[in-house]
Image 1 (cartoon, rainbow over the protein chains, first blue to last red):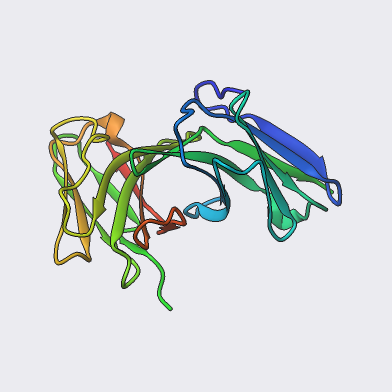
Image 2 (cartoon, rainbow over the protein chains, first blue to last red):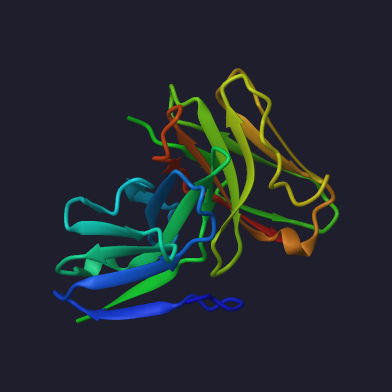
Length: 110
Length: 113
């Protein structure tokens, strides 16, 4: 969902469960969609990207799904670990730039 | 190998003063980006350098903001006559040409009092 003011959407997940983080994008002409992870006090870190002509891409413990019909992107993290605790940003490319979404905070429950 | 570095890590300045923020990208990366991140917010695009091409300045919020990149490497973001609303973390990222895997620096936290 949309963040309001200083409040990021938060997803709380039990350690060991799968996490699904969702993102809506706006530009149907974007070529690439990217997920970044930002841990507290650090810069964002690239996780995985997907081209607009694909609908699924898998990495190590992560899967990105792209639904162009409804302009929706999701990141699935398998067997969530404490180290996955971070803010996750989706991003889309536009005119050779990367435009970031507002982010979702992933909170891992012990 | 060395990642993207930024300096200073923290900067406190008085309203109205000018500040310069520095970014050292990864060697060989031709693309360099500046972003601003306010507390609890996403990343706001500011400016993008790609090789010797004219920079894309479309994200700069006002003419108080400027950036340059010397010799295709180090970049400096300058904010003139700082305002309290300029307080944020300023992030720099670099990448190889035509890729979207950006490598971010740790950021400079700017506080305008």
